[in-house]
Length: 132
Image (cartoon, rainbow, N blue to C red; front, side, top):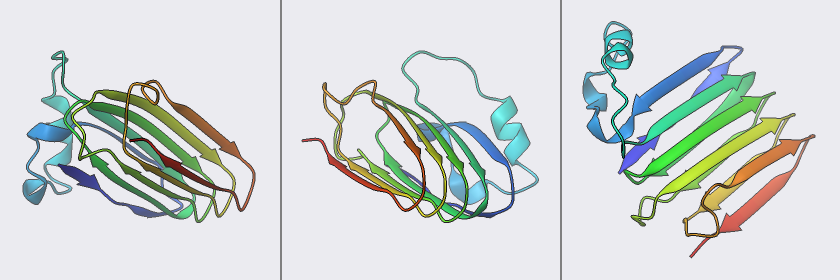
């Protein structure tokens, strides 16, 4: 299982990592560029791309080893909770939030949700999605 969580204050973050092969206890500002540079393009390995621009944005991801996810949060006080760690189904997902104080909560993945794209534009919106 792979977990990510960030809170960003007017900072641009881009992260592309192979989730199942990184020892997060050894990642710091001195080693992160080496980790990214050492990645290769093996088939069957998942990648996470997260960009957050704004204040107090949060992305909490619990992913299985076959998940490819792209997250873009633009604005302030946006939260994303994505959990498919209890399934071994492959998932390809893209989530974009533009606005302030939005919440997206996705749990599970299945053949219907594979290829899912969520785009939220506006303020104070909430999406709950359950895939079993």
